[in-house]
Image (cartoon, rainbow, N blue to C red):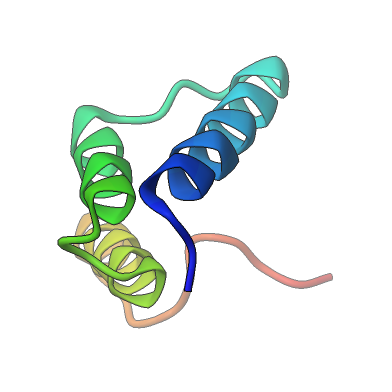
Length: 68
């Protein structure tokens, strides 16, 4: 089990890495991150929510990325 402080630190690091890579997270994703930090959403639930939004935008059941 992680503490709220540990979750906050982990998410802050992950978001910093994402931004360094040139990606700016969408507000809904940031809301999911905040929910994970607060403990009202699990990490797995956040992943499923994000994947579901991606499928809705792409109109498919496949992930937005492809393997080469």
